[in-house]
Length: 208
Image (cartoon, rainbow, N blue to C red; front, top):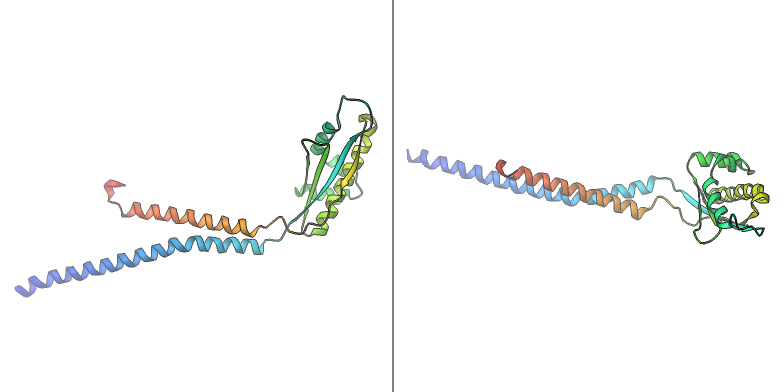
């Protein structure tokens, strides 16, 4: 009878020890998972930056100047208006490279903006190579120049290429630093979510 009584507690102790070892092992694996998620996220960001084709962006600048004494419309106003329509089909069609420009505009690879304190229009073009980006930006500048020239007689303004586009030295995208940082941040976010869910699971049902 004594053997039976001492056997039951021993089995309970063994089960308790096994449960504790299992709990410690699960906790250790969970901690490793939390630490691994940011590392995996950073590696995925680096992989994305490595396999993404580079994109280069070149800039050309067109200067708008007044040719008359009228003050009804300033050169700055013409520059602002030109920037708004620089990538429209009607303007792009006036250049010698109209087909290339129209295709680039459809792909959202052309942008235009006007300086707030000078009658200067910044024309940018993106492409897969530095040479293609520079050529496209210069073609866009030529088209804008031709468009302003066609309306210059009535508006008393003229356009001139202030600075031609040069070949960019570095790609604008991908950015390895940004991609890795975004991957790490995503990993940290997933780790935080996993930590909160695990805490909720380990809490008593009445405290959840």
